[in-house]
Image (tube, rainbow, N blue to C red; front, side, top):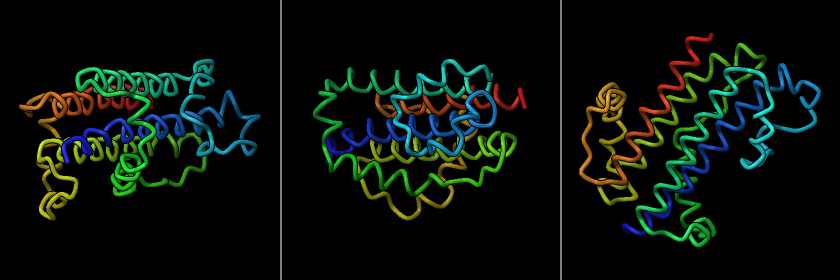
Length: 196
């Protein structure tokens, strides 16, 4: 069970990279990449294509890229500290399906009509990603794929501000890694909020 839970973590992180990439393109389509709007759907762009966003002259897009870098670094660290074979883990359909189940509990497609809508919705995007990461960390912490119903009530909300302040102590290195990522991504959101 523990190996399966460890295996789903990199898939969750990969989904998060794709989500940030999608929102980067949604913003870029309103300005620098407006000629691509309507031709290529943001959902159809592979996460590896985020490098195209590096040429976009938009501070919010650059902060999303910063978030992507943080998630990628977290994933690399996770593979390293757990001595996992990246190819083997990322090719595992069971891990991918379990991560997908987690992802679809929290991630919602927000209505984005223009640049300002996307900008406003980024708060919800970052918050739901924090919930997704906390859910995944809880699976690691409890060594359970199926979390108890009480978990969904208010546990995350009760601990959210402490997570952001690095006050929630984890005895497990993997859980601590995800808790740190939650706080680190929130720092990018705060910078985005200052720009809007």
